[in-house]
Image (cartoon, rainbow, N blue to C red; front, side, top):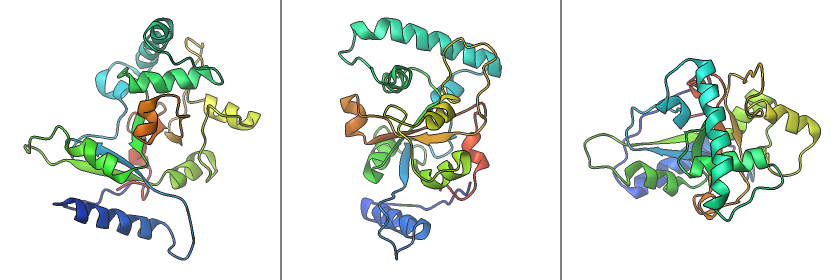
Length: 221
């Protein structure tokens, strides 16, 4: 992972830098629809860790137990508070809803919109700390982790091999001898909630390594 510090003082400079990054990462000679993902941090020194790994600092096994308890409690109580009823892949859809309801998960929010990332970086800033917008190449990360360039939406129809592969990152709650992959993987959620759609949300789901993104060079800046 390379962390390039670029001081930006206005929106025009920010958008110019976004274009430069896209041109650096993808060939100008190809009509690629691929775009980087963006994540805003109120403080530049915050690490790229999902909330479960920020809020809790017990052993790895204890973190997974805490996560299982939160997942089960959320699925039991959330239906009375929401009109959304996950159907096709309920484990994943509930997990996405947990994230957007503020529950601690191993999901890290990203957006396909550069200005959305900038908004979350500065919306609560009082100027005491430098904010930051992280940029991720999800295609290169996906290629490194699962061997495919095409990004995966786990809540739509997939072949059995794809379902089995992704299930390693979200095994059933309370599964005995649970073992997560170490690295994070990028995933696309179905737009089952308005907030997910309006924020153009996408995620990395992290495995057992809470600092998993730091092991991949050249995919973030």
